[in-house]
Amino acid sequence: MRTKTLTLLAAVASVSLVLTACGANSSNSGTSSSSSAPASAPAAGGASGKVGVILPETATSARWEAFDKPMLEKALKAKGFDVDVQNAQGDVQKFSTLADGFITQGVKVLIIAAINSEVGSAVAKKAKNAGIPTIDYDRLNLGGSSDYYVSFDNVKVGALQGQGLADALKDKKGAEVIQIEGAPTDNNATLFANGQASVLDAKYASGDLKKVRIQAIDNWDNQKGGQTFEQILTSNGGKVDGVVAANDGLAGAVITVLKKNGLNGKVPVTGQDATADGLKAILRGDQYLTIFKPIEEEANGAADLAAALAKGDKAAADAIAKGVSKDPTGNRDVKSLLLEPKLTLKDGVKEVITKGYVKASEVCAGDLQAVCTQLGIS
Image (tube, rainbow, N blue to C red):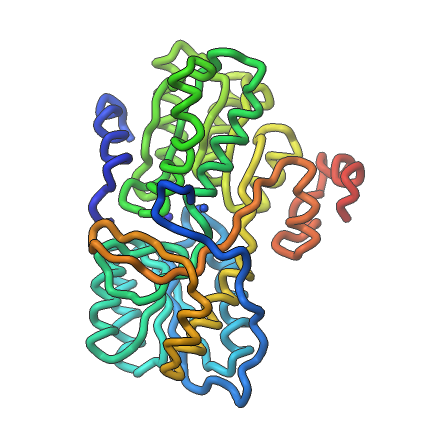
């Protein structure tokens, strides 16, 4: 899951004007990463006070309500905070109104996963003027003023997607690839695309793979993503050998089109977020990979930072956020806790379920019971 489009996706959009139009980083991204979040043990005596959290939406990704909300609530309560987690449901005005409410209440810390950088930056500025520290959660607000950022290494997410697809197509010289990217106004989508390019551009240049087209999808809209993919597929004579889909939602839309054309299971498709639907598609063989991001680590990291900031302990916050993320719009370095994403193929589905991110009952029913049994998933 806004602001100025970064150079790469702006170029992408310009190449694809003839068409109608999801959820991480490499050495070229200007970021460094920490391998894990600090343990989220209860703070001595409690952190006291209230933390406000605003999540972006529910329409394009199940993660925000299914994972982030309960995990943030648990981690922040363990620190002794009173916690209020709200979701803006993709509405920029609602996002601003929720933020105004939290600022008026005088929350100790505001944690925001913004719909876009414009609203995120505006909210962070208001909070700063009110003396409330803000943490950018999952998405860095370009041109913003939050002093800290917690996310996954998003360029690495893209690099894992690109390398996974390249591996799947390694025996098919000149395989034709379509890339369906996330919203051009979401900085994470740009980082995913940068990571993919770090692997795939050399493959395209050598002729090992052939890029058919790369297209960003406004608002991470799954329906629009499927329609756009179908248009590209049709214009390419119905030929495709591999698809980069930026998240599991877009992957599902792509797979629907592939099924219509008798191509599902024959064309590897990437994804991201390890959703129940994405995992089921992998077990069926319709989706090749997803990227598992252990969100509990992200929530714990945000809670650790919030506890330090609520106490005014900048040194403790800096010890948690040891990485740096570049904000090219604001021409600044943002102290960051960047966590490690994990490539998940069919044999990795069990790990996601075992760690409790998705229930076996959500994945293994009906036609998938036998394959779950074979993989030891119960």
